Amino acid sequence: MKKFFTILVIVIFSMSAHAADFSAFKNISIFKNDQRAIKSLLNAQVRYANHTNYDKFISTYDEKYVNADGFNLETYSNLVKDIWDTYKNIKYGIQIKNIAVNGDEAKVELTETSYADIPLSKTVGGVLKSTANSEYYLKKIDGKWKVTYDSVLDETTSMLYGDARNLDIKLTAPNKVTQGTEYTASLEFEPPKGTFAVASIAKDKVEYPQKQAKEVFRKMPDDNILERLFIANKDNANEYIIASIGLTRADVEDLSIKISLAGFGYQIIRVNVTKPESKNVKAE
Image 1 (tube, rainbow, N blue to C red):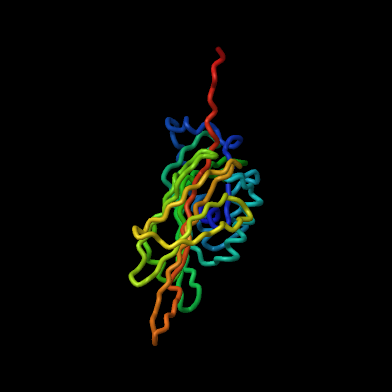
Image 2: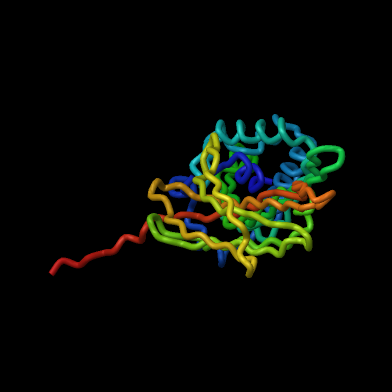
């Protein structure tokens, strides 16, 4: 469920001080008792989140927890509170793909999902969907496994209302870019018949509190593909690409035109920003 917290109000830091050399895990056997305990912990997280049991959910994290976006446990706890105060009916799920154990440390690869019905009114329905592929790092502390660090490899979240709920939206950008380099984000969807579509693509750093991304709406081109060029920040921060979509209908009655909003929404994807690789220059 972490991906959803990160993408709506944001979360996570750089691994250095917290990760062992997990590349060596390829040839290390998994201890079944530890594997079962780790699965139990992560499934408990989902259960606590689905019941908005804040205290038990936060208790699964080590007090020194920090994540790939640079947020510590206090910041992450505030994010959880913000989300659960706003959306009380989110359903979370996980699919554990691999667990590697090395003594008192472990790495877990998993897919996280979130879903919620978020109606805007009695007549305008909305839906929230989110999917992320993540890595969790855990440590056994006083005989109990705790999450000490996590990293979101990729994630997509959509919040769509009205006619926009049925759109097949393709928002793409590089999964990983180097600080200060250019990259292109592309938005593609086919508006429903009889609607006029406008959209914008914006970029924002993953931070908390989250700032409002500047939106510049444009008419969707005839090929239904909107692109925008960005330059990755140099502030050691990951980024979100945010696509905003609006659909309108025009009705003609008695020679007058009535414009109404048929649907709107957002799709958000993550771009992880990395430091340039250091080059070793040999002295002559």
